[in-house]
Length: 267
Image 1 (tube, rainbow, N blue to C red):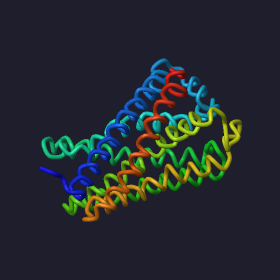
Image 2 (image 1 turned 90 degrees about the vertical axis):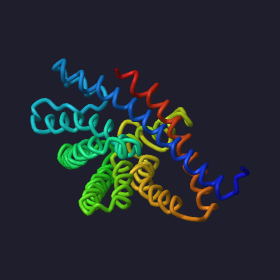
Image 3 (image 1 turned 30 degrees about the vertical axis):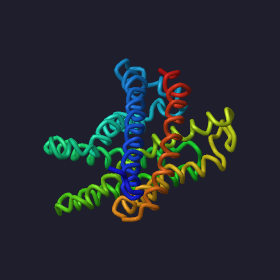
Image 4 (image 1 turned 45 degrees about the vertical axis):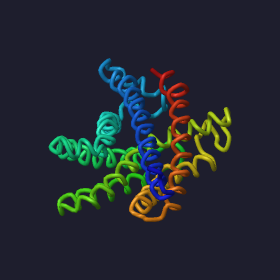
């Protein structure tokens, strides 16, 4: 049976979306492994000072509250990174609905807690990258809380279609920190030098742009995804698929750069 342009656009749209999801999931599993080996192992070995090999103020001697909040933040990070993609797997939602509901509740509670911890660390302990970075991280934290609220609201109302849309918005908001690392390393792979920012202070125009790109732009992409998915326009599907394919290839390269240049060397 010969495919019409419209049918072909739907098929490409679905396959590119799956390619993005698989690439993202594998990249986040690599991030989880790094978190476990770097942060969890340090905790188990009673050596939290090792966190400072990543950043000099992740562990501050005498700051009991700050250290506990950061430790909680790290512990929760692995949980949400594992559970996040699981919530979007259609097979799990249909075949094992109880697992979806239970893991979803854990994910939502953890999302709220990790956002609160992140906001505390940003404004009390201070964020790397100065005021612009603090504002960008705060926007991401608020986006997470808003997306979590609407995800819960529409689940309670049994409006599953809208609930699923907000769940995807929440997932990309929760992935903001991971996106930052991946696309930062993509930039470094391309330039092989600290172009557009000062490495000592970790400030500069590129990092300001990146803060917007990884925290706000993904929300626009998700909205465009659902508009294209429910649209009868083949052109819209083709255009979205092309843009998402470029982003996915960038994600794959950036993930490889993060694994080889950032995560593995530290563990």
